[in-house]
Length: 171
Image 1: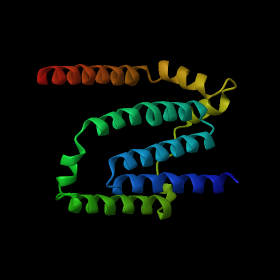
Image 2: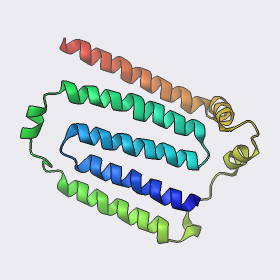
Image 3: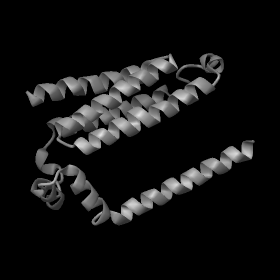
Image 4: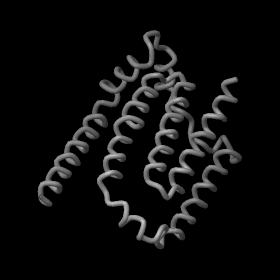
């Protein structure tokens, strides 16, 4: 039953992403993106990662999409319709699509022994937890992955300061 649910939800994710990229109407593209984000959250629920699913839905389907809608509403859409639809990016996009399709084909039908093994320590920690995955994520985030977490927070701080500086410069 889980396998059937996985295939259905995965199809919704892929279909939403394809419709988002191919939609000419910006508001429809944002709605397709919301559908895709919520379906990814459902995939996390299938993986029994409820915390990550909640963060996916709250942060991406909530916050990021609201930001995109504000941008869509504030941008003059009349100017966007006059721009050529694909510009000259169809060739690099096609090459990238072929490369990614080849990679997926290798992963699905290639030699499984050639793939690196999953880390045992993380897997063992996730299996041994009795308190739920939220506590496990917090414990691993603030012990084993403290340095990458702090580096990511500093990068976000620098990006925020840069955005404020660039916005203030234009005013």
